Length: 192
Image 1 (cartoon, one colour):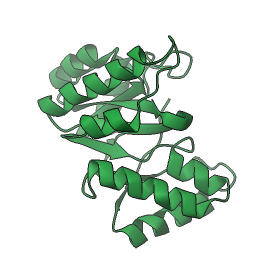
Image 2 (cartoon, rainbow, N blue to C red):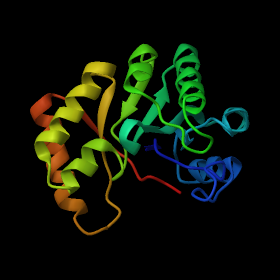
Image 3 (spheres, one colour):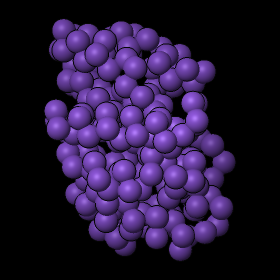
């Protein structure tokens, strides 16, 4: 078991736990690896990386990015080059918008896509949000766009069950979409 969508207290007003507490808990429940995906930044990445390695947990560095339209995506670095590309995406998202309103453009995502995994995001991800709005054709088009940018092996549809109204139906719909498009799925918890 590996959690791939986790927010630390570096996701201000959203995440509650320190990176150390998250790593300790991951180790206690038997995780071999953990991803920290704070909002639009890598503020705790160095602390997380160092502490996870010392604790015997493989650190996966990532971020939950806001993209054009205000939707969310999770980007995970595959390696050092992916980390470098993630840094470039984050930097450009912040520099191109007013402070506190970072958004990554599709042009920048396309330019720095290599060596990154992209997860479709939570209910605020474009694919899920469009399904929740009753727009399955638009959701499909969004999924196809992300698959074109990141590649079918690196873009994964994220399934979450937080026992919210409509979660089961949403998961069925987007899992079906993934199957239709030949995309892989990944179960996450959107830990805060």
